Amino acid sequence: MNMRDLLVRGMLAGIIASVLATAFAFTVGEPAIERAIAIEEQNAAAGMPAGHDHGVMAATATATAAEAEEASPVSRELQRTVGLVAGTLALGVAFGGVFAIVFAFARGRLGITSDRGTALTVAVLTFVAFYLVPFLKYPANPPAVGHGETIEARTAAYVGMLLASVLLMIAAVILQRWLAEVRSRWDASILAGIVFGALVVAVSLLMPGFSEVPEGFPADVLWHFRLASLGTQLTMWLGIGLAFGVLMDRAARPVAQAAQR
Image (cartoon, rainbow, N blue to C red):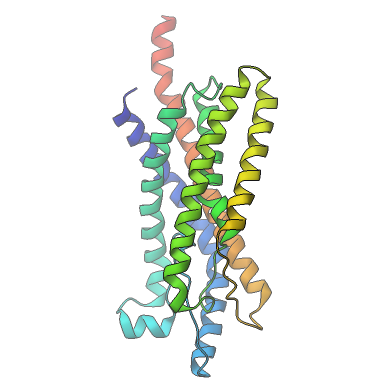
């Protein structure tokens, strides 16, 4: 199977996963966003400064209703419906393409014989590298959390943590394959995971921290928003991995049947 076929299947898997991620984000994430926007509007009405952190929760970030009316003709209702679907769909297609490229390099190199197993493993690893590790250092914040004057510094730090996470994951996979030659695959995976975790902690301690949650901000709103952000990304990547594995199996059936004949 050539790279073009893998990309097509990856993007198709991304579309399927985006449907699941949209449903999760709308059901779990939107109530927390609505509450956070209400808090931000109350702060604005009282003359209190408020900031935004819209870049970390893919496909669920949104402006306040007041800002939307001033800066954009797009209503909040349109943002939470059509905007959410379109944004998540675009991310799903992009993530699916990235997933297909990673799968092409990982196929046959992870010690896993089946395409489904490889796809699920790649999905877990990409979720950890692309989202979970940066999230643990810089968790998603709802509207009314974050200061506008620090957004550039926060964005740069998040991107730096993301790049470090991806590079460390690649190094961990290489280490696991090398250790698997002298130890069991299970032991090699555990040791590589320990090294990866230790290096992630070290890098995280070196990166700057930002504590911008306003005093008195409801903890349950913050918790639910971050849980929704994490769950949306987990649903997206696992959905891509599972759908991609099914598509690969369906493509392999005619070849296997022809070989048997």
